[in-house]
Length: 406
Image 1: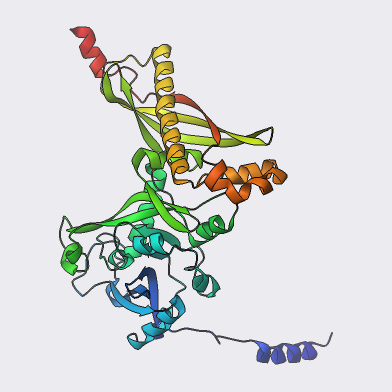
Image 2: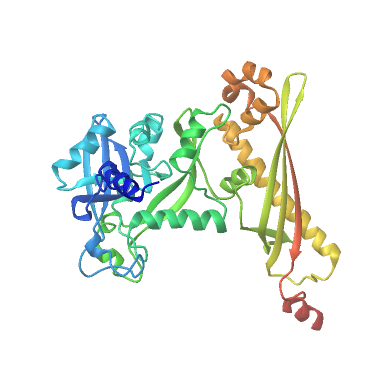
């Protein structure tokens, strides 16, 4: 082929390239990191956005407060829908709103209880800039704007603090779980499963939360912390799972990565710490005479993290007994979680999905009254198998040696 002809074709092709037609200069956009949604007494939506102030986010995400000014600015607007709220922000912000970095959506508890969350995500889901992977949390016992406007130490951008806390507590403690917009939407539209969303609350003096002085002290007067798991039925918040009951729900959902199970020993409460290092849950359906039953089979491995009583961990019989006690604790947590879900008449475990996969024809008969009639009466058999993998670098506690020397 003639080289000159090729060069002409390549040159003409330059005119077809779009170049930087969609470029956005940093000085022309307002980067939104969090979006809070409430509703006022007039029935209007109240939107609160957390806008990053790039000039005050220096030295990375770490390092506490800045003497220059706050790392974020917060704006609030009202409207009859979220699209209207978003447009009205332009009356107070000189830059174009940029939602591509919005990684947190906060919903006020009052709104979640009274109206529900079914209609909240449509505008965000349609926006090509808004991330469907944005994390969702519920502001427990407060408005979403209280969470969004709180300044946080260590992590300068508050939305990052919330997300990192979610990751940490889900991985290391097991009483909370991460849920992004996609997860919540899938649970809302699926048959036989309701969403669970972690709650966040502002602990301390609310009026100090938005002040720079709050992050310039060694002990902040207001801090954000994860607290409980919100339970939904038909899109509305109906209850909260707390503590071991919340963890019981995550055992069933196969969401436990690491946690600590405290075991009573010979009359001493919580004398042995059993550190879970891995866990696997299987949910198996049993259909008999068009009546579904569920088996929850949990396998757990863990290490001995701490003992507060004299005990010989070289004795295999002692280890077997510890395993049995751990199984009892875990089984009780699961049963309490299932009991509370039945009382709320909301299948947050996806048992209905399991029944649907096992017998689609039967599910068609049950689905209309699953939460109200069949789920509360569902027989659930819980089986737990715990195993002690390691006892630590010390097999015999010094407490045992002290007991033997007496």
